[in-house]
Length: 355
Image (cartoon, rainbow, N blue to C red; front, side, top):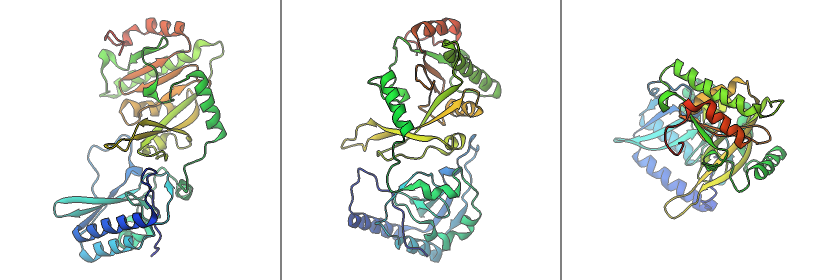
């Protein structure tokens, strides 16, 4: 059994190795004293879209005291001084339960890697969970990339990301590149709703068709402000965490856009004595406007699976922020904004503010 442990430590935590080891030992001791059974469930890396109507059953339930003890003993041998930054979602969640229910968990990133709140090398669990691990299906992260996703530091800013940031600052000065931070009621802003009667969510495929039709029509019109419309668009997606270290996006988003590149991280909520704060981590792609992945992403947005999505032309002259219920639109010119308002007056909100 391997005795090394992958540890993701929040940047704000600033624990020494000794302090971290002491905290880990204390929590593990409490788990060992209280755990009566272990339940193994699929982790977030196996989230699908559409989601199943019923919650999937546990992959395994372990209530044999010797097996529970063996798993805890294996985890106790982990080396707390090995610290890296993980960029993949967990494939398995292992819940520790007492007589009243769940008391703690760890997440398995793959048959090799486990994490959090203290992340573990998966081989520490293999003697107990060998059958579960061996029959585990693939996730949206190929196994060959898992090692690369376990970084010793956050990903470095690429030249493309740096150029994109410079362009953003030139086009949208003083505004962070996050959808909810765009200036509402600016002279270029208009909001369209996705469905008749300002209905927020689709109930059937016909309503999805109407919703997607509206998105595609406006996107095509945004790109038509010049004689030779740009086919390529910039697509920005995101994840959130409580530290500046980029967290992975959800599995349905990653499955839709697996090759996205890291752009930047933005502090969206300052930490205080009651809150650790919040960071948004941005990832970008350049896609053809007709790429079916854009339509899939728009469906994820419509069902509130993906949020804070931005679409724009590569030069960022116009921006499109779809949300679950509509889209905030920032055309390249005031004149085009006015044209869109008139052309699609039936899609406007009836609220006086335009929301």
